[in-house]
Image (cartoon, rainbow, N blue to C red):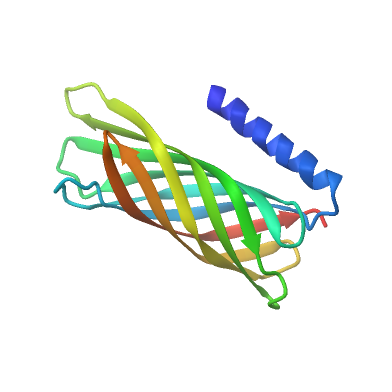
Length: 180
């Protein structure tokens, strides 16, 4: 619950910053999320699939502030085992808006990731870790308020239990834009 209040406060702050200056609007998105997890220390890699969403407030034509939340469930585990991850990230996005119907962007986000695992007959175990992404993508304008996020390709760094993981995150979905 505390994290939701922090997220709400961050969104409110980003909105007030955007209102104080001439803005290019705000956007929300819903996306399919795929994460290729490389746990390190000789453990096999895994696929994690799910959904994510973002809230972005554009400070000006080129710079925006982004809040990103994603959930994915690890696939391919043996029967009786289950695992999922939730990531919550915030940071700047740099967009190039003079490219016609295509808006390419790059972003660097920082935050955390929560991993939960369970096995039949045993209680679940969870742990939190630092997370960071950097990468970019491209939005294709469909209407003045709707865009298709064709691809968002990012390096996702996590640090669980002293082990550094170098993961890959890919997202695609719809973006709704409002404001100026």
